[in-house]
Image 1 (cartoon, rainbow, N blue to C red):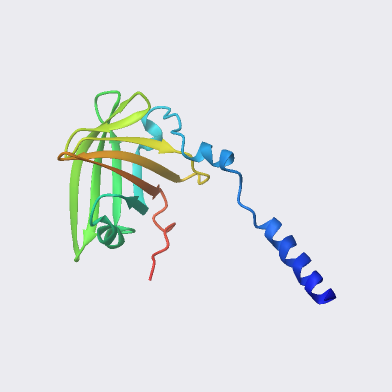
Image 2 (tube, rainbow, N blue to C red):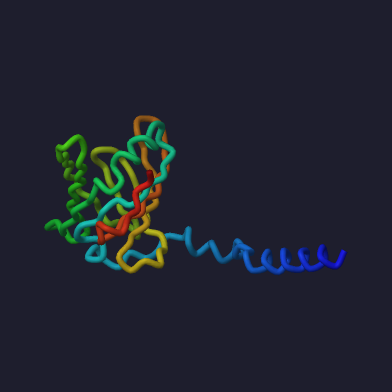
Length: 158
C-alpha cells in the first residue's frame, strides 16, 4: 500500500511540472506584431515549415520545405517590396517575382492571387512567422509559414 502512495506522489509531482501554460499566455503568440518598415523583411528567407487549409497543400509543402526560399528587395516605391519566390524541384529551379505592399501593418499581395499577410511573434532572432489570408477564386484560405534567414535551421522529416 505504501508503494502505491509513493508512486502516486511521484506521478502527481511529475504532472505538476509538465503543465501547459495558461491560455492567456499564448494570446501574444497569435497577435500580429508591428512591422517597423520594410527593411526587416528584406533579404533571403528559407521556408522551414508551413501549414495551410488549401486542399492538397500538405504533399506540396513536404516537397518544397527546405528547397524554397524568398529573396526580397526594396522596390522604388517606399512601401513596396519586390519578392522572388524560388523553388528547387526535380533538379530544376523555378522562380516567380511579385510585389508586396506594406499597408496598415500588413503585407498585401494582388498578383498572382489576392492575399494579406501579418507577422506573428517568434523567439528566434533570424526567423519570421507569417499568417496569411488567401483568396483563390471564390474560396478563402489561411496559411502559416515559418521562414528563417539561416537555410540550415530546418529539420527535414523522414
